[in-house]
Image 1: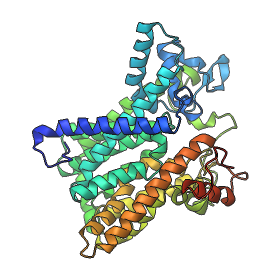
Image 2 (image 1 turned 90 degrees about the horizontal axis):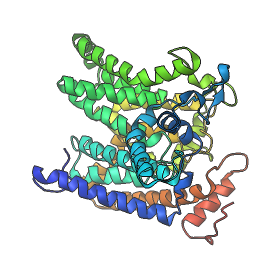
Image 3 (image 1 turned 135 degrees about the horizontal axis):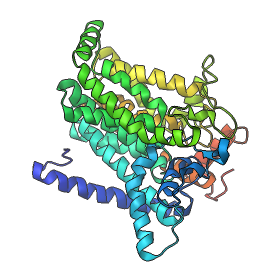
Image 4 (image 1 turned 30 degrees about the vertical axis):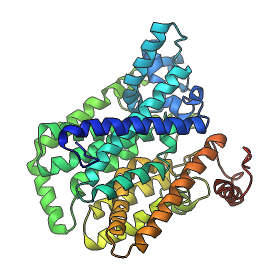
Length: 442
């Protein structure tokens, strides 16, 4: 697996476990400092993703889920797919067993269940970061890779959606898509049944968690492709490996079986567009002909670069790697254009009550590669001024992300028209201790 230190292979597992304990402990302390309330973890979207578990294992009736809309026959329909619940299930079952043994209230929503979801998110994100480190080490130095995964977690909204909204889809989507990229790199070099299964599970679970993760399938075609000649060669190679791709399709279908069974149980059909069943009516890409790209990137309400400015480095690194034709830059550019257009076209392009553009988190496993390239260049520069400047900004961005996460957790929703640049500037001043630290930030 991955070697964080200069130790022999027999010490790798020990190092990963020790770092995992440190990661868990440090982040648990942060949640205590930020006054995380475990009883309020399962709410809003998190409740929609999670409720399959208590209604199946405790109440034994998935046709009358609470956080859902009424449909024919007196049943209710949960529009949220069950991918997150599948990954939460082992941790849920431990919490369920704990309550059974000690005789606690077992309604599926107590703080014990909330903490099980928090532990699940931290576990999956840590596992994803470990695998991502291993992926980055193929192209970058140990220090560049390590700094990159630290900045990715503490300098972006992945931090917030791991520790403070752990029931949302993003921590789990991040993990399965790192898993997919990890398997894909091996699959394209030498396809085997093992890495084919990893690819199938990764992409199947990713799409089941958030359907827009389907754009990752383009990596089969574009990963490590930089010319039309290599693109043609990849197409020919794909046709030669048809049986492997059929296996990936079969695994993806198997992953979707629980969801299809749920749709059939409630709607009487095995395939459904679940976002037709929302409280406010059908949800879709209504801005497809006028995507809100400016708001998505720079909006005061959840703008990607406003709340995760570390990704300014993404653009610098992407342009550089495109020029040099390295590090899967054309594939990354393609995914960026597709997911940016999709998110900017969605009916709620701010993703309401979103800390930053949260719907991009699942794409961080590839978006972070150009950032790692910039960090590698700074570390290897002869003049250390570049490294000093980069270290300064990475530190500032990470500090700002931690502080903004704390303030956002207090408020939960910064939405227009009440949320303006004046409010943002006030929070910014509070983040850097320029003005008093009262809890009310408005």
